[in-house]
Length: 264
Image (tube, rainbow, N blue to C red; front, side, top):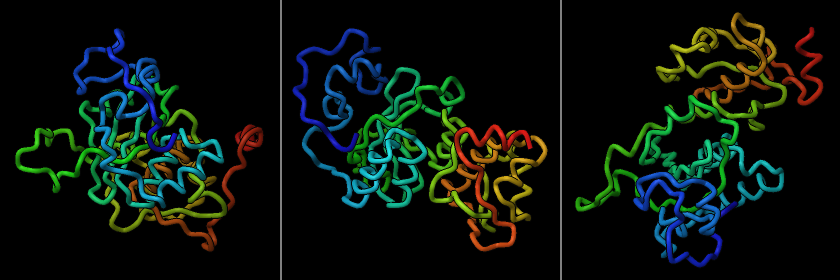
């Protein structure tokens, strides 16, 4: 879903909302009933103040054509590549999370902390809408603004959490294909990443250049963990993708071929 759909705002709020305070989360079912846009839900103003850049819209349309416009990693990656602020409507556990990303500032805005929720069931985690950012970045907030500075949070931590939590593990297309990987010299992993189960593999990638197949065979790793790790580092801007290095290999085929790969 790109941009806003025209919809008449209902006279009354649905009864299954936590309350009518816009700082609380909408149930996704209620959000759909009022029209499925941020303006209809009172999350963003309806004056059209902010629109998506045409370059980002073009990328999102390509995702639609590939039926990937709901994938959280692909949509976040598109915003990062274009360095465009955007309001991403994120569905998680039946609730709607309005997340505004500021790639240039390496920040995102959300009124409730999303990271603890991502540690729970993520089967329905998806993007259900992308709209122009209605929240300003911290540097543009007026002195008399009512916006709470604590609602702005570090984007790299969210990107790592999404890479780990995405319900359907796959390698992002931009880094897939014949390749080997290594961390960039200036990359500093998030504390949660360095201390977690993927920490030893991250430390190893600081000094070794390895293909996905190789990373998947390291102690404590498998194909799914390797893909999540490489995606997470890429989204955080810390991945070197080497196409012509002697260690480069084609990534693992998708679908039924995975089963045969695991039996090798």
